[in-house]
Image (cartoon, rainbow, N blue to C red):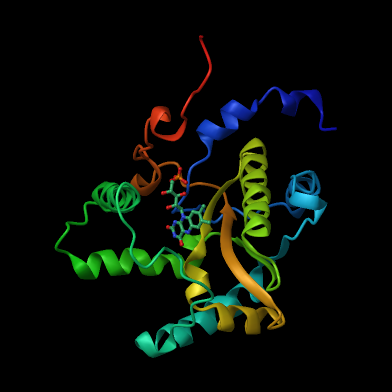
Length: 233
Ligand SMILES: Cc1cc2nc3c(=O)[nH]c(=O)nc-3n(C[C@H](O)[C@H](O)[C@H](O)COP(=O)(O)O)c2cc1C
């Protein structure tokens, strides 16, 4: 069990404090903190206790090598795409399409990038492939034999990691954009073809001053998600 002082920070606190951070300071991360986070995240639940998550955590030269490999692939243009899976459904309808559009607009607005500024938007998107300057990158993958229930398990592990990072004063940004160059990432990490890359997770200390980290991220009202039945009868 963690020490009592860390327990003072509640799950509710961590849920509200976590956000996808897209600008990091250069401050290095103590691997001892990460070890505590990953040890605790092993408590994440999974159907049948399969614990299907696997991750590679990188800093320094190995992290740079992935960035370099993906940059070379990006330079090939559209011919370089190697999507591991469809990141979104091909025909995304409302309300989901409206939410995706809305969060993109809010993100670009925070940076003063206008809707018609296609180059500015692309440049901001391409920052993804630097991990937004994060000193640590995690790549989350699992066996290709796994299906939707095990992918949900990976999500529970990922959220556990992100909340535990908050407890340690660290920030993160999940980044499925790396799956657009999955083969290159897996080759750079020497991960076998029997594995599928789900997402990256940029980890570091948030640049608290950066506008990109300071805008309110919208959420649908709880009534859009929860349908109460049989209460208050
Ligand atoms: C699995 C997953 C992958 C994501 N991939 C990206 C990504 O590639 N680039 C990015 O900027 N944000 C990415 N995000 C962040 C989402 O845009 C973000 O979680 C959502 O807009 C809600 O904002 P918040 O995390 O700040 O609360 C991803 C989030 C998740 C959960």
